[in-house]
Amino acid sequence: MTLQRGLYSLAGILLLVGFVTLGLSVDERPPPVDIALADAFRDQHTRPAGQVAGLVTHVLGPVLPFVLGAVLVVIAWRRRDLTVLCVKLAVVLLSCRMTSLIAKPAFYRERPREFPDLSYPSGHVVAVACTGFVAVLLCAWTRPHLTRLAITIAAAATVLGALCRVVLGVHWLTDTAGSVLAVGGVGLISAAVLGLLPLPRGGA
Image 1 (cartoon, rainbow, N blue to C red):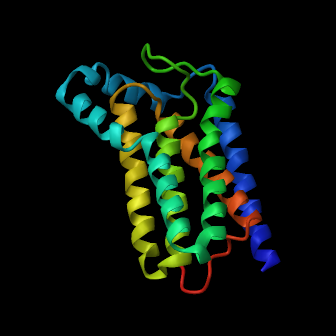
Image 2 (cartoon, rainbow, N blue to C red):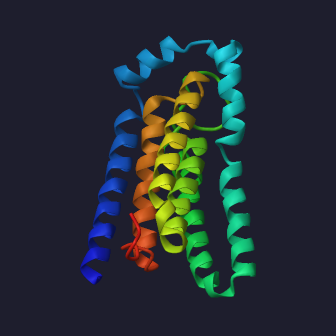
């Protein structure tokens, strides 16, 4: 068990190294893939595709961690035997969500178009990814048969959220990739430290 937790922590550290390396490599000059996508979706935020993307990111965005946090509070209140689990999950959720708030000033990357706030990593994608990560853990510990479905939904929501931010022209593709690396790294480390990883038997 201790070895498995160590492996999860090591995987988390490697993801964080990847996050920092990516951030440093794109800090001053966007790579060709970023520029190509930014050009492809230029001014889409004023067109129907951008309007749809904007609506989607109102849902797949910063509101999600708050919603899941409220769900954890309700579960802890109704199921006292799950209180410790919910507190641990809340710590993982908060730790992952803080990555964008802490990292943005460190990298100070500008957006593809004029827009308030900094760019790396995407706060919206961090919010979706950390909500999905913790939702998967919640299912694995309370409803193991739903874990694979939770993984599928979390992955799809994260990809959709990332795509919408790129279509809107408010993030580079590498911003969204960095978000996933950051959440994955902090999520694996914090979950392993708190004993949420490895998953219980029956989890995916």
